[in-house]
Length: 104
Image 1 (cartoon, rainbow, N blue to C red):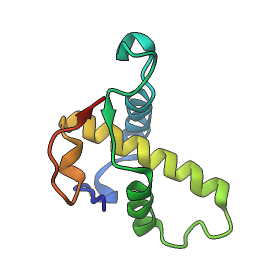
Image 2: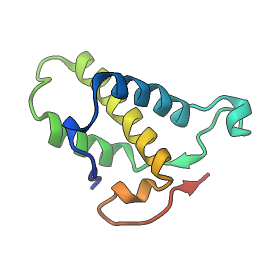
Image 3: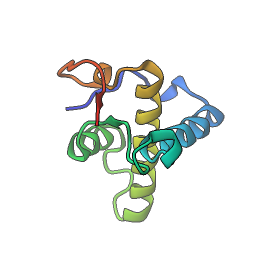
């Protein structure tokens, strides 16, 4: 299970937007940035683990709104990627404490 060391109220809307954009760059780097045809440099927790953590935050808030839920999840994932990248340690947010991000 993924756990976040950050609380929802810790960032402003402008900071969240900046983190989403930064996270998108981490998740989908350009060929020049990654050197690997746009493949991410880091391996995040599995989608199942991230989905479980996301669901623990949103509960049934998106019931009946699958498209809105997917959009919110993609933003959540990008913010997670940006924060892990900034910390230099995606493992910090893992309950298993596995340590540094795994390079692909």
